[in-house]
Image 1 (cartoon, rainbow, N blue to C red):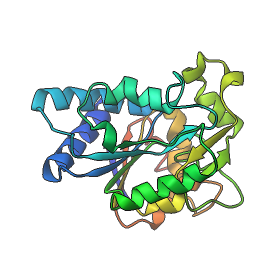
Image 2: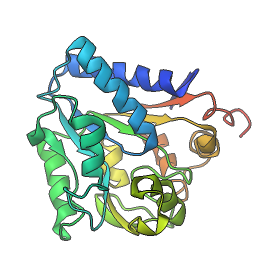
Image 3: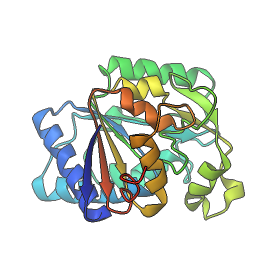
Image 4: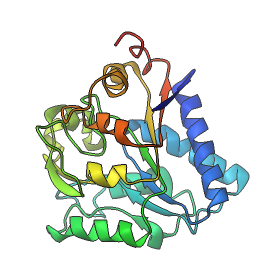
Length: 243
């Protein structure tokens, strides 16, 4: 995996936003896989600024979000639908017909529907990922085995704590389950960029880059992909050389 280390989280986010806008300029029909979480907020802020200053047209690009909480409908203010509207879609001219998110209030067929939609779009060209402290990507949690395709999953306590900021910092309000793209779906993307910032993620980064392939660190499966870049700030990169 190719590693890039930036002086600060803002510089890492700005560089990735530039990379995305260049990719859309080259291929206006680019299909993006998009994350949520704290790290993505800074990325989307930079992407909005660039889209305005450079007048980038996103109207023909498509997006697929990685995950959604079970039980939350698209109009729930605490859903990832609402998160994406607040932090990106309300500010950049993505077409609503081309922005795809899982419906956490849907029945079991929702996961199959999502896989079909990705296939109809021709697959994901650029997948942007964040990293959980326990090594998860999307909501693919550490376990004895991993699910290949989009699926319903049970969230670990540490993951629920990390998402409490979306629920007024009330851990008890965070759903126990979520829908998530599976590792097979993620690994079928043509190019992957893993964006990680902050000292709290340094141990997970070291396990992904220097550790063995294991379902206990789902992001370690990125080692199998032929075009993965890991973009870090100095704090997130702090333990790479020591592991």
